[in-house]
Image (tube, rainbow, N blue to C red; front, side, top):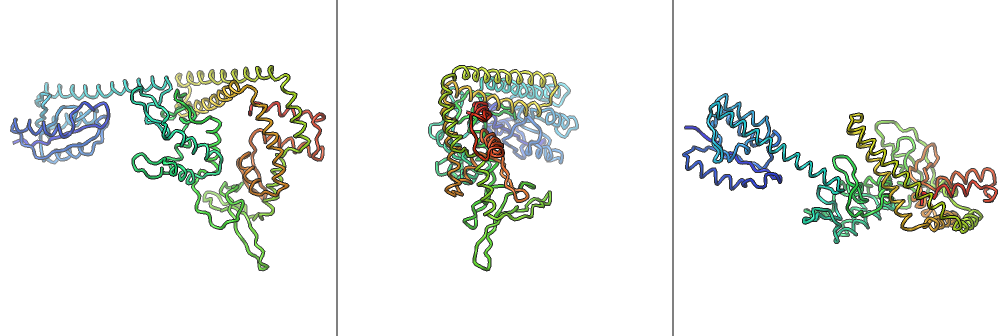
Length: 514
């Protein structure tokens, strides 16, 4: 008597949702075996797609057949056994070698004859064709959605999948909460663990667990371009049609904050170490830490130095930097980007007169932005042509495209802001002039924490090398620092705007910043 194995399979994927459930298959096959007087010795079932080889239960069943535990299989349909050429070929090979002498299907006829094996191979081929064709149809639909700017995936936190229109819309319950967290992280005052706690306090938790989001999920949210209007699909950035949550400018600030504060910090030990975590070692890139020393006289000193955690290279920065010396260098750095009262008054006066001829320069500014956007669009088209002509590898194409898409988005936001606010840049620049002038007050008041936070806001890449504090200022602070150094070198810190017209040319050249 032939011994049979019952095999049932149900994929959880959408393309097989019309197939009977495993329980329904088992019920039907048991009834069929009873009607046909088939001797079933074991039942195998699993929930896994058969598009690719590697099903554990299926391979276990074939292993049992090789051992001779059974020589027949009872399944609902041939496509339950295989939807790929490797598994289908194994079944036919077992039939050829008489390891399988009988295959029974309630919906398909089979006999171990040349005609029967041919029809079985046709059935397996049809199953594979159905899967391949369905995959192409699905990919074609996804590509069409991408052309429309729609992400074909689960909506990120703050949005939801609209089932009727099949779009991604803002979630009224979480949209503004996520936006608040993104804005908070962009200030640079939060670490990943701190923003994780803030999200939890706003009830932004794991969908299933109800627990705080894991740090990897928090970091993914902070890096997701979906929030400023783009989305990624298979490593490639596309323009989205959904409502952005934040601007590209704010997204860039978040990325800068991630570089500075992205790694979880251990719980702080001693308090009063003002510059701990403020900078990194200029040689190995690891954090600058602090030590508290108490002399025999009872005086307390704070020293800053490299943590020497690098394993790949031996750091030679053995010099310790006293807090008083580091404070002096912080003051000097703030002084470089502070605007003297004479410069402030001259700038404000010049700014008032700017309203007279601002219309012409505004039109020119808008046209330059539009030209830059058109130039990037043309570069994107050429890049796509180069990839289609196999002049570029996929990875290189994606990297270049993603960079150009980000640049284009930044320019589009600048253009949109300018067209919406008109000459709002004049007011923004007035505010910047006052802010730069107020930086000097931080020095006069000896506000150490204020000076430290000020440098964090206007610069990046703070590092200590050979006992010297270095940093890179953002625009327009960088140009102010360079101009200030030149001015003080030639004019002892007092510069007349009319005799040094390059200062105002510098201000005019940086309108794009605003």
